[in-house]
Length: 391
Image (cartoon, rainbow, N blue to C red):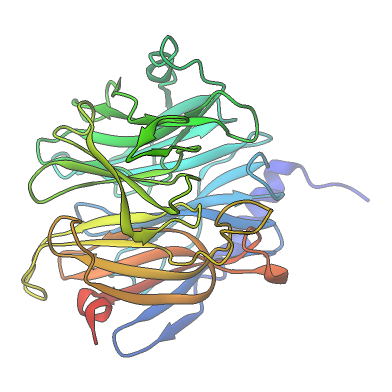
């Protein structure tokens, strides 16, 4: 039987994916859920590592890793879907990067509120990092530029074998700085041991610089030994400091926090947040300024609020379910409200918002054969802040 070339097969598959633009929608009073990508769709084994941003013009961009086979080192493409009507409908699937036979991983995007650009970073084979940008709200992206050299600046301090950005979304500070959390590992394909840091650009993505290493394997925080810090999310607080919220495998089973005045250097106030459980899973965090629909500045946090797997031999805290949203009105000092978005199997997530007060959570939804690492679908939920804080 004649075989279809890989590139032709990908193009044909994307055509059929585009036919699925009338996606599954579940609605409640203040909550709408829309499935954007479904596993075993005829081309990809499954979709993982969701990210979502809102552009300066109000376009939503939802992107992910499309894995032809399973695993972090699979043949992985980058796909995206866009919405220009506030998440009510979604445009057909578009290919952002055709990986051919490579592992393309850990996509990070963010909107530049000063230039209107969409910036996007990703890694290749966990050893190289690339940057690209869009001037048309994500319809097209320019030629990629390799920026691995910024990671080489860590070599003398941390002789890494593996690098990764994000995942999720990057942030732009009030002064225009573009900021991306990163993690590095001296291990191999198991990604351990590790450390976390940030990279940043003060010229809208033209050049990139490294920040300080925030924390690494073996460091002591509050009398506890840090174990394998990795996927980190950042938020600029309303006092203008930058807070990072770090995934670790440390014994407290809580999210690790650090704070900096500029997002790059001088990390202080390192502590475990007693209110935020750590199921060893990527989380998401978002600054939501006050608007007509909600009068208070807020920070929203999402992760699987669950520790049932913390004592299992297969690894600490690996039971990914009960994806929960939490809200803080005091710059992450306290979390006053919880709302479960998905009680079943659920994993990685990312958050975005629009000026009208709509909040979006794009997340890994379900697991085939009850396996949280074999994601059933990537779903985007739309809701107002009041949905999280309802009694």
